[in-house]
Length: 404
Image 1 (tube, one colour):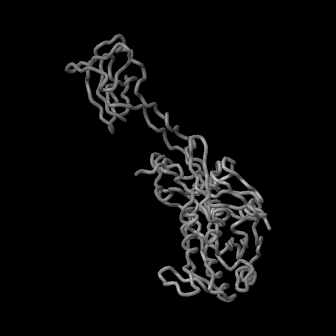
Image 2 (cartoon, rainbow, N blue to C red; image 1 turned 120 degrees about the vertical axis):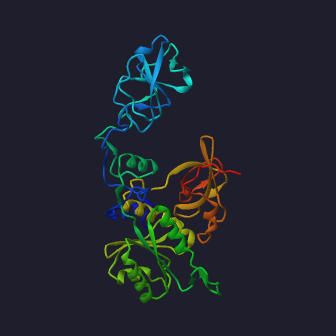
Image 3 (cartoon, helix red, strand yellow; image 1 turned 90 degrees about the horizontal axis):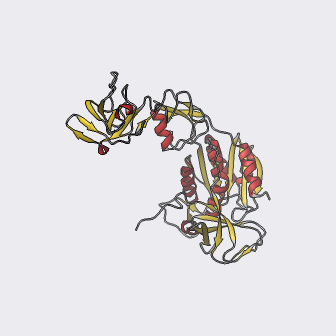
C-alpha cells in the first residue's frame, strides 16, 4: 500500500494546469488568472477630496482667518482655474482638488457666515486629501499571475478598465457509479437495491471545488458495460469512478481500465476509510477509482481528487486547512492504518475542540452531515480527553456566526 502523502505527491505530479480562456470580469470570480495585470493609470488619477467640505490653501488659513467661498465643485467635474489665496470652494467627495488648494476641511468642522468660511486656528495642511496614485501607481503589477480572483480583484480589474480576463478554464469531471444494486434517485428501492447517492455527492464536491461535473450514470457489473461507460468519460478532463475497485467477483473497474489500454499507478492507499482506491492514466486522462462506500468515496475525493481539480485550474493552495484540536472524548485506533474519523470541531478562545460524530462506519453518510472535520488518528493510537490531534476542516464557513 502507498501512504496518503505519497499518493498525493504521485497524483499531483501528473496534473498540469488546463489551458486558459477569456471570460468577462464577473465570470472570472473564484478562478485563477495566469497573467500579470498592470495598472494602465494612477488610481486615483488625481489628488481628490476624501470628504464633503471646503478646499483651500492651508497657508492662507493659518491663525483662524476667514476665507471667502467663491465656487462649488461636485464629483465628476474638474476645475482648471486656480483658487486664489484667501478663497475657498465647496467640494464634494471624489472631486479633483483644484489648483491652489492643498487642504480640505469637512463641512461639519467649519462655520459659514454668508459667503465667508470660518476655520479654527489649527489647520492641518494636506488634511482629507487622497493623493494621486496612493492606491495604485501606473505601470505597477496590481494582480500577479497565479492569483485567485476574489470580489476585491474583480473590483480592481474593473477600476483598471478591464472588461474581460484570461483564466484557467474549469475542469470537466466525468462521474461514474458502478453496481447492479444501484437505482437513480426518483426510483423506489426494491429488495437488494439502493439509491445511487455517490454520483450526486461527488458532483456536488466537484461543483464546490469550482469544476463542472458530467454524470455518466451507472455501469452494470459486467466488464463490457464498465468499459463502455469508461470510454464515454474520456471526453472529460478527469474520470472519477466509485465502486467496483475492490477484489470482489464483480469488481471490474481495474480490469476495464487495463483492457482499454490504461495504466494503473497504484491501487491501495494506507488509510481508513478508503483503502481500495486506484489512480490510473487512460488516453492521457487521470482516472480516479474510489471506493463504493459513501463516506470512503467522499473522504477519498477530499484527499486526492479535490486537490487535483484545484491544481488543474491553476490554484496554488490545494489542501484544506488543518488545525490542532483537543479531543473531548476518549478515542482509539486499533488498526494498522491511519483512521480519518468524522469530527465536530468548535473554537473556544484560542483553542479548538473536537469530538467524533459517533459510529464511524464508512457506509454512514450522516456522520459527515453531522461533522465539519476529519480527525487523523495514527495507527494504534489511543487518546484521552485533552490530547491534541490533527483535524482537517471541511466546512468553509467554519467560524461564521449563526443567528437565532
